Length: 492
Image (cartoon, rainbow, N blue to C red; front, side, top):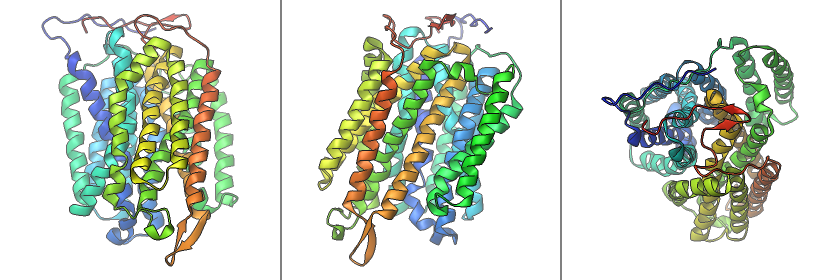
């Protein structure tokens, strides 16, 4: 049961013209937070008096909190109001930024970064608001842009953060992120309406705790496995523990009336295979970001490195971010014309081709940028198709939770990618100019692995149930496996 949409007030019509730009801006800001500290990491031990291992937690902790809070806050938004939870997430982001800006203590910095990571739920919440509030003809291109903000923010965040690190006090980037978070809050308060769609039921506390424990154990093992050793007791213990917890949690979720994750809906072929594809797409996307910046910074003495600065290495990803902005409406049109299943298949192929290009063009800066941009173009199409496919498989009352789970799968894919890239670059090395560096073959191996991940996403897509797109667009709110979802009014 869902509440009927409230009638439009002719005296105070929602500013739907600005809803999508505001939500997309929020998504970009949140995505920028995920990569904000990457250029700073080599300097963190010196700046804070900490160890490299502690500095690495500035990235790891955002992954953990983002993975946990994204599906949970998506469900909370479905139950208690998406705009309300969106505002809370942006408030947490702002508080975390202020905390980081006001300290040089590594423990407090990690706590602030944990708060920033929790705000990743903004993106699936924004997609849910778009589905609830906009007329059907505007839904698909709008969610394409909203979903692409994950890649856009990552591509923009690296060069901007690098510029700040090289030219200003490092606290400046956190003060700037706090200001952007506050601006997001004000814009959402002013522009974005609250959705009347609610999911009845009681919040699943035990399910949330079980999901948190399983995710934290899994992601800790993945992200720390290369440091602890993949066969070490802590790594194997966490993996085994997370598996046991997941099995118990799954049994409990199937028996509770109001689960934090509806496993029956998640097991539908459309949703399950889309989430599997999302995991591999997340892997393939993140390899592009991780490897490009590091590869062009390698010294020329390696025989393949270009000795580029941090700023130049970050700028190599900027054309990819711009291509994602430009391709958002194009990818939406592909989904509307041929269906999001076809769009996701095309995206996986484009990403695989991009890595083939990168495999054969690793000595020229402009060819490296070209290959990275091709991968980003495929990512833009994929990030448009994924939420469209999810919305085909779930009722409108579960959009937030379902898109949160899909975003979680992308994050798990990114975590796996980070672990694989770290392991390859740390073990396939040679000595150049008196220092140990990854060989060219290490980078080429990563390109092959990432291309393989894209092809696995293609395989998952091939098994998705075919669905004929309608004239309004392939993923607009409508019938979902026999369930009629209330569409937003044209005037809203």
